Length: 313
Image (cartoon, one colour):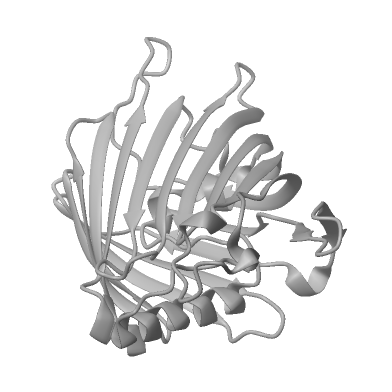
Protein backbone atom coordinates (compact mmCIF):
# COMPACT_ATOMS: atom_id res chain seq x y z
CA UNK A 1 0.00 0.00 0.00
CA UNK A 2 1.23 3.48 -0.79
CA UNK A 3 2.41 5.52 2.21
CA UNK A 4 1.68 9.23 2.37
CA UNK A 5 3.30 11.97 4.39
CA UNK A 6 1.75 12.66 7.80
CA UNK A 7 1.00 16.25 8.70
CA UNK A 8 0.57 18.12 11.96
CA UNK A 9 -2.37 20.10 10.64
CA UNK A 10 -5.54 18.14 11.42
CA UNK A 11 -7.36 19.00 8.19
CA UNK A 12 -4.43 18.03 5.98
CA UNK A 13 -4.04 14.79 7.90
CA UNK A 14 -7.71 13.99 7.25
CA UNK A 15 -7.27 14.66 3.53
CA UNK A 16 -4.19 12.43 3.42
CA UNK A 17 -6.18 9.68 5.13
CA UNK A 18 -8.86 9.94 2.45
CA UNK A 19 -6.20 9.53 -0.23
CA UNK A 20 -5.08 6.29 1.41
CA UNK A 21 -8.68 5.04 1.41
CA UNK A 22 -9.03 5.84 -2.30
CA UNK A 23 -5.89 3.98 -3.24
CA UNK A 24 -6.73 0.97 -1.12
CA UNK A 25 -9.87 0.67 -3.26
CA UNK A 26 -7.78 0.69 -6.42
CA UNK A 27 -5.90 -2.36 -5.07
CA UNK A 28 -2.76 -1.83 -7.12
CA UNK A 29 -0.92 0.16 -9.77
CA UNK A 30 -3.84 1.68 -11.72
CA UNK A 31 -3.57 5.40 -12.47
CA UNK A 32 -6.61 7.22 -13.78
CA UNK A 33 -6.87 9.78 -16.57
CA UNK A 34 -9.54 12.29 -17.49
CA UNK A 35 -8.33 12.51 -21.11
CA UNK A 36 -8.28 8.74 -21.53
CA UNK A 37 -9.62 9.16 -25.07
CA UNK A 38 -6.29 10.81 -26.00
CA UNK A 39 -4.12 8.38 -24.02
CA UNK A 40 -5.45 5.02 -25.20
CA UNK A 41 -2.09 3.33 -25.68
CA UNK A 42 -1.53 3.22 -21.93
CA UNK A 43 -4.93 1.60 -21.35
CA UNK A 44 -5.12 -0.79 -24.30
CA UNK A 45 -2.08 -2.30 -26.09
CA UNK A 46 -4.27 -3.25 -29.07
CA UNK A 47 -4.42 0.47 -29.93
CA UNK A 48 -0.83 0.28 -31.28
CA UNK A 49 -0.72 1.28 -34.95
CA UNK A 50 -4.38 2.31 -35.12
CA UNK A 51 -3.68 5.94 -36.06
CA UNK A 52 -2.12 4.57 -39.29
CA UNK A 53 0.94 6.79 -38.77
CA UNK A 54 3.77 6.91 -36.26
CA UNK A 55 2.39 8.86 -33.29
CA UNK A 56 3.64 10.25 -29.98
CA UNK A 57 1.56 11.26 -26.96
CA UNK A 58 2.62 12.84 -23.67
CA UNK A 59 0.43 13.48 -20.62
CA UNK A 60 0.92 15.31 -17.32
CA UNK A 61 -1.62 14.99 -14.48
CA UNK A 62 -1.55 16.94 -11.21
CA UNK A 63 -4.29 15.47 -9.05
CA UNK A 64 -5.98 17.11 -6.05
CA UNK A 65 -3.93 20.30 -6.12
CA UNK A 66 -3.35 21.67 -2.63
CA UNK A 67 -2.94 18.33 -0.87
CA UNK A 68 0.69 17.51 -0.19
CA UNK A 69 1.55 14.02 -1.34
CA UNK A 70 -1.33 13.81 -3.82
CA UNK A 71 -0.66 11.92 -7.10
CA UNK A 72 1.44 13.45 -9.86
CA UNK A 73 1.55 11.39 -13.05
CA UNK A 74 3.40 11.62 -16.36
CA UNK A 75 3.00 9.23 -19.28
CA UNK A 76 4.64 8.96 -22.67
CA UNK A 77 3.67 6.64 -25.51
CA UNK A 78 4.82 6.09 -29.05
CA UNK A 79 3.47 3.64 -31.60
CA UNK A 80 3.41 2.95 -35.31
CA UNK A 81 2.07 0.42 -37.82
CA UNK A 82 4.72 -1.61 -39.59
CA UNK A 83 5.04 -1.67 -43.37
CA UNK A 84 2.47 -4.41 -43.95
CA UNK A 85 0.05 -2.44 -41.69
CA UNK A 86 -1.10 -5.69 -40.05
CA UNK A 87 1.23 -5.23 -37.11
CA UNK A 88 1.49 -2.29 -34.75
CA UNK A 89 4.26 -1.81 -32.19
CA UNK A 90 4.70 0.71 -29.44
CA UNK A 91 6.27 1.77 -26.16
CA UNK A 92 4.60 3.23 -23.07
CA UNK A 93 6.31 4.85 -20.08
CA UNK A 94 4.71 5.96 -16.83
CA UNK A 95 6.22 7.95 -13.98
CA UNK A 96 4.05 8.51 -10.92
CA UNK A 97 4.61 9.83 -7.41
CA UNK A 98 2.13 9.48 -4.55
CA UNK A 99 3.46 10.78 -1.25
CA UNK A 100 6.82 9.12 -0.67
CA UNK A 101 6.09 6.36 -3.20
CA UNK A 102 7.43 6.50 -6.75
CA UNK A 103 6.65 4.14 -9.63
CA UNK A 104 8.35 4.01 -13.00
CA UNK A 105 6.86 1.62 -15.54
CA UNK A 106 8.13 0.77 -19.03
CA UNK A 107 6.12 -1.47 -21.37
CA UNK A 108 6.53 -2.73 -24.94
CA UNK A 109 3.32 -3.14 -26.97
CA UNK A 110 2.45 -5.40 -29.88
CA UNK A 111 -0.83 -5.47 -31.84
CA UNK A 112 -1.94 -7.71 -34.69
CA UNK A 113 -4.40 -5.83 -36.91
CA UNK A 114 -7.02 -7.49 -39.11
CA UNK A 115 -8.66 -5.33 -41.82
CA UNK A 116 -12.43 -5.78 -42.00
CA UNK A 117 -15.22 -4.48 -44.21
CA UNK A 118 -15.77 -1.17 -42.40
CA UNK A 119 -12.80 -0.93 -40.05
CA UNK A 120 -9.92 -2.74 -38.36
CA UNK A 121 -9.94 -5.28 -35.53
CA UNK A 122 -6.78 -5.73 -33.48
CA UNK A 123 -5.49 -7.86 -30.63
CA UNK A 124 -2.67 -6.56 -28.47
CA UNK A 125 -0.18 -7.65 -25.84
CA UNK A 126 2.13 -5.64 -23.61
CA UNK A 127 4.97 -6.65 -21.33
CA UNK A 128 7.32 -4.66 -19.16
CA UNK A 129 8.55 -3.83 -15.69
CA UNK A 130 7.60 -1.48 -12.85
CA UNK A 131 10.27 -0.01 -10.59
CA UNK A 132 8.77 0.76 -7.18
CA UNK A 133 10.56 3.01 -4.66
CA UNK A 134 9.44 4.09 -1.18
CA UNK A 135 11.37 7.02 0.27
CA UNK A 136 10.41 6.24 3.85
CA UNK A 137 12.95 8.61 5.31
CA UNK A 138 10.87 11.51 3.96
CA UNK A 139 7.84 10.54 6.05
CA UNK A 140 7.13 13.05 8.84
CA UNK A 141 6.18 11.32 12.07
CA UNK A 142 5.66 12.44 15.67
CA UNK A 143 8.33 9.95 16.76
CA UNK A 144 11.55 10.86 14.98
CA UNK A 145 13.10 7.54 16.09
CA UNK A 146 10.42 5.35 14.51
CA UNK A 147 12.39 2.53 12.86
CA UNK A 148 9.45 1.66 10.62
CA UNK A 149 10.32 4.60 8.39
CA UNK A 150 14.02 4.08 7.70
CA UNK A 151 15.71 3.40 4.38
CA UNK A 152 14.51 3.52 0.81
CA UNK A 153 13.02 0.16 -0.23
CA UNK A 154 13.28 -0.49 -3.97
CA UNK A 155 11.70 -3.22 -6.04
CA UNK A 156 11.43 -4.04 -9.76
CA UNK A 157 8.59 -6.32 -10.82
CA UNK A 158 7.33 -7.54 -14.22
CA UNK A 159 3.80 -7.27 -15.56
CA UNK A 160 1.85 -8.04 -18.71
CA UNK A 161 -1.40 -6.89 -20.28
CA UNK A 162 -3.89 -7.78 -23.01
CA UNK A 163 -6.49 -5.96 -25.09
CA UNK A 164 -8.74 -6.03 -28.14
CA UNK A 165 -9.73 -2.98 -30.18
CA UNK A 166 -11.94 -2.14 -33.16
CA UNK A 167 -12.04 1.16 -35.02
CA UNK A 168 -13.54 2.63 -38.16
CA UNK A 169 -13.65 6.21 -39.44
CA UNK A 170 -16.57 7.11 -37.17
CA UNK A 171 -16.49 4.84 -34.12
CA UNK A 172 -14.24 2.72 -31.94
CA UNK A 173 -14.45 0.27 -29.03
CA UNK A 174 -12.06 -1.75 -26.95
CA UNK A 175 -11.68 -4.07 -23.96
CA UNK A 176 -8.45 -4.47 -22.02
CA UNK A 177 -6.76 -5.76 -18.89
CA UNK A 178 -3.63 -3.56 -18.74
CA UNK A 179 -1.98 -5.43 -15.89
CA UNK A 180 -2.61 -9.14 -15.39
CA UNK A 181 -0.14 -9.86 -12.60
CA UNK A 182 -0.80 -8.79 -9.02
CA UNK A 183 2.44 -7.23 -7.79
CA UNK A 184 2.99 -7.31 -4.03
CA UNK A 185 5.85 -7.38 -1.53
CA UNK A 186 6.58 -10.24 0.85
CA UNK A 187 6.75 -8.61 4.28
CA UNK A 188 9.31 -11.16 5.55
CA UNK A 189 11.75 -11.24 2.64
CA UNK A 190 11.12 -7.82 1.08
CA UNK A 191 11.02 -9.48 -2.35
CA UNK A 192 8.39 -9.04 -5.03
CA UNK A 193 5.57 -11.52 -5.42
CA UNK A 194 3.84 -11.82 -8.80
CA UNK A 195 0.59 -13.74 -8.95
CA UNK A 196 -2.16 -14.21 -11.52
CA UNK A 197 -5.32 -13.42 -9.55
CA UNK A 198 -8.43 -12.68 -11.58
CA UNK A 199 -10.02 -11.04 -8.52
CA UNK A 200 -7.51 -8.20 -8.87
CA UNK A 201 -7.85 -7.65 -12.62
CA UNK A 202 -9.02 -4.23 -13.74
CA UNK A 203 -11.19 -4.46 -16.86
CA UNK A 204 -11.47 -1.39 -19.10
CA UNK A 205 -14.31 -1.17 -21.62
CA UNK A 206 -14.21 1.97 -23.76
CA UNK A 207 -15.85 3.35 -26.88
CA UNK A 208 -16.88 6.42 -28.82
CA UNK A 209 -18.79 7.57 -31.89
CA UNK A 210 -18.54 10.66 -34.10
CA UNK A 211 -21.81 12.19 -35.34
CA UNK A 212 -21.66 14.73 -38.14
CA UNK A 213 -24.05 17.65 -37.58
CA UNK A 214 -22.79 19.61 -40.58
CA UNK A 215 -19.47 20.25 -42.31
CA UNK A 216 -18.34 22.51 -39.43
CA UNK A 217 -19.68 20.69 -36.37
CA UNK A 218 -19.24 17.12 -35.14
CA UNK A 219 -20.24 15.55 -31.82
CA UNK A 220 -18.33 12.70 -30.17
CA UNK A 221 -19.80 10.93 -27.11
CA UNK A 222 -17.30 8.74 -25.26
CA UNK A 223 -17.41 6.32 -22.36
CA UNK A 224 -15.08 4.15 -20.33
CA UNK A 225 -16.19 1.55 -17.78
CA UNK A 226 -13.76 0.25 -15.15
CA UNK A 227 -14.60 -3.02 -13.44
CA UNK A 228 -12.70 -4.76 -10.63
CA UNK A 229 -13.92 -7.45 -8.25
CA UNK A 230 -15.15 -6.16 -4.89
CA UNK A 231 -15.48 -2.52 -5.99
CA UNK A 232 -18.37 -0.53 -7.48
CA UNK A 233 -18.54 -0.14 -11.26
CA UNK A 234 -16.90 3.16 -12.24
CA UNK A 235 -17.98 4.94 -15.41
CA UNK A 236 -16.43 7.90 -17.24
CA UNK A 237 -19.11 9.41 -19.47
CA UNK A 238 -18.39 12.34 -21.75
CA UNK A 239 -19.34 14.31 -24.83
CA UNK A 240 -17.21 16.55 -27.05
CA UNK A 241 -18.05 18.95 -29.87
CA UNK A 242 -15.61 19.56 -32.74
CA UNK A 243 -15.70 22.95 -34.46
CA UNK A 244 -14.17 23.37 -37.94
CA UNK A 245 -11.87 20.35 -37.46
CA UNK A 246 -9.80 22.50 -35.08
CA UNK A 247 -11.34 22.86 -31.62
CA UNK A 248 -12.77 20.16 -29.37
CA UNK A 249 -14.84 21.36 -26.39
CA UNK A 250 -16.49 18.95 -23.98
CA UNK A 251 -17.03 17.61 -20.51
CA UNK A 252 -17.25 14.35 -18.61
CA UNK A 253 -18.53 12.82 -15.41
CA UNK A 254 -16.79 10.13 -13.36
CA UNK A 255 -19.36 8.34 -11.22
CA UNK A 256 -19.11 9.23 -7.56
CA UNK A 257 -15.88 11.17 -8.07
CA UNK A 258 -15.79 14.29 -10.25
CA UNK A 259 -16.97 16.49 -13.11
CA UNK A 260 -14.48 17.61 -15.75
CA UNK A 261 -14.17 20.22 -18.49
CA UNK A 262 -12.02 19.25 -21.49
CA UNK A 263 -10.67 21.27 -24.42
CA UNK A 264 -8.33 20.19 -27.21
CA UNK A 265 -6.77 22.29 -29.97
CA UNK A 266 -5.78 20.75 -33.31
CA UNK A 267 -2.90 23.18 -33.83
CA UNK A 268 -1.99 21.57 -37.16
CA UNK A 269 -3.09 18.38 -38.92
CA UNK A 270 -0.27 16.67 -37.03
CA UNK A 271 -0.01 18.50 -33.69
CA UNK A 272 -2.69 18.60 -30.99
CA UNK A 273 -2.80 19.86 -27.40
CA UNK A 274 -5.42 19.24 -24.73
CA UNK A 275 -6.28 20.43 -21.24
CA UNK A 276 -8.79 19.24 -18.65
CA UNK A 277 -9.88 20.37 -15.22
CA UNK A 278 -11.58 18.05 -12.71
CA UNK A 279 -13.86 19.31 -9.96
CA UNK A 280 -14.00 16.80 -7.12
CA UNK A 281 -17.42 15.92 -5.66
CA UNK A 282 -16.17 13.66 -2.84
CA UNK A 283 -15.21 14.70 0.72
CA UNK A 284 -11.80 15.67 -0.66
CA UNK A 285 -13.47 18.70 -2.25
CA UNK A 286 -12.82 20.72 0.93
CA UNK A 287 -9.09 20.14 0.80
CA UNK A 288 -8.09 20.57 -2.86
CA UNK A 289 -8.59 23.00 -5.72
CA UNK A 290 -9.14 20.42 -8.44
CA UNK A 291 -7.10 18.31 -10.85
CA UNK A 292 -5.22 19.57 -13.91
CA UNK A 293 -4.25 17.40 -16.89
CA UNK A 294 -2.36 18.37 -20.05
CA UNK A 295 -1.85 16.25 -23.18
CA UNK A 296 0.32 16.77 -26.24
CA UNK A 297 0.20 14.58 -29.33
CA UNK A 298 1.96 14.47 -32.67
CA UNK A 299 1.35 12.33 -35.77
CA UNK A 300 4.27 11.94 -38.14
CA UNK A 301 3.54 12.51 -41.81
CA UNK A 302 5.61 10.81 -44.46
CA UNK A 303 5.26 11.22 -48.21
CA UNK A 304 3.71 7.79 -48.66
CA UNK A 305 1.01 8.29 -46.00
CA UNK A 306 0.28 12.01 -45.89
CA UNK A 307 -2.20 13.12 -43.24
CA UNK A 308 -5.19 14.62 -45.06
CA UNK A 309 -7.49 15.27 -42.08
CA UNK A 310 -6.92 14.99 -38.30
CA UNK A 311 -7.91 11.73 -36.62
CA UNK A 312 -10.92 11.70 -34.28
CA UNK A 313 -9.48 9.04 -31.96
